[in-house]
Image 1 (cartoon, rainbow, N blue to C red):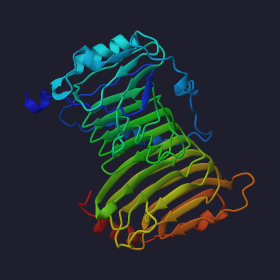
Image 2 (image 1 turned 135 degrees about the vertical axis):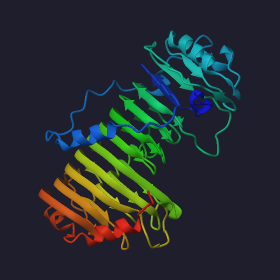
Image 3 (image 1 turned 90 degrees about the horizontal axis):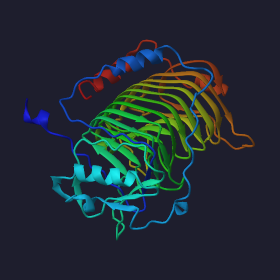
Image 4 (image 1 turned 180 degrees about the vertical axis):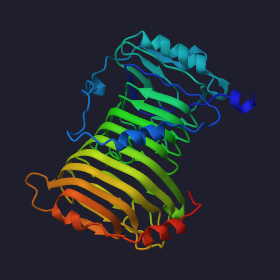
Amino acid sequence: MKRKERSSIVLVLVFVLIVSVTFSLMSVEARKHHHKKSNSHHKHRKDHKGGSDSSGPTLGPAPAPLPPYGSYPPQTSMTVFNVLSFGAKGDGVTDDSKALLSAWKAACKVSAATLEIPSDFKFLIKPITLQGPCMPHLVLQKKSKHIPDIKPTALRFYASYNVTVRDIKIINSPQCHLKFDSSNGVQVNNIQISSPENSPNTDGIHLQNTQNVEIQHSNIGCGDDCVSIQTGCSNVHVHHINCGPGHGISLGGLGKDKSVACVSDIVVEKISIQNTLAGVRIKTWQGGIGSVKNVSFSNIQVSDVKVPIIIDQYYCDKHLCKNQTGAVAISGVKYDQIIGTYSVQPIHLACSNDIPCTDVDLIDIQLKPSSGNRYFQKALCWNSFGKSQAPLVPSSIDYCLRSDVSGSVLRRIARSHEHVC
């Protein structure tokens, strides 16, 4: 066996200032091995083709809400468990896995315990399972004497394989709550994420360069995207999610600074979205290259969402961005059963002048203004090709997509982005 095959994964768990992760039961498993192509994508796509449940998302009962942070029992020396006290070195070289596991087991037996991971250390953690059930209100916390210049992520997995994260609550992360980067084989189930609506860049779950992912049966409320899917992601299945507040479920932004972006085979279904900036959207920067293809948004219930359906190839997070030619090509995107209310605009398809959106389907779209809302914008559709199917509300959506009968537009775009992704 090669040495690479024997090597174990390093999990970098960064817990930040005044960030607490409350566990009822957690299992985190990671193994590093040679990448094996998963067949789960075929299963997801096959299941999806079977149709969606017209009765709307069937979401399980929400877990009990977290009590306010100040309502937890006071900490004492008997309830604080520091990993250094259990033999951890924190030098980035010594294996601290056993020390972390010992500290976890000790803290797990005590009500309102705090497992401390000190700042200014680097802990090398190999594949490990932190398992409950534990006594109530177990908190993982970093205490820091200063606020860092770059806000860290509460929980991040890098280069991790076969990872399961379930039955946890993450609150008030300064930036992303849960992030997966360069990983494969990810399962997220029954988690709660909560941060204020006005907290910037606090994505709930952030995926980048990660494949074969399932995110399900979770409640996410934050100040940015509930789920953010970035470049290098494929075979991602997101379902049975309550999202709000936040910015909805997003692919992108992609292609910033003329970079290459490749995203494919994304299924988002049986989602409830309320009081968010967007519903389901794809956003790309001008000048990027690459492609977004084979994306399905289906059975999405929206309530008082500003703009439920968005493709924006002119994305800009500043006051003004320079106009550029070229764009990430978007094709094979289906919106099916997007139903509910909006507060600003029902649909916004702003596709590139140079690289139009192709093979876009709008099926059973029923969007009405929020109750009492008198001021809203009409549907915007620009340079988008595809087909629509009734029922369509408002009726202007029926004229949203242009027809590419000969397929010449699609073939031209396919040639221009050949061998990029």
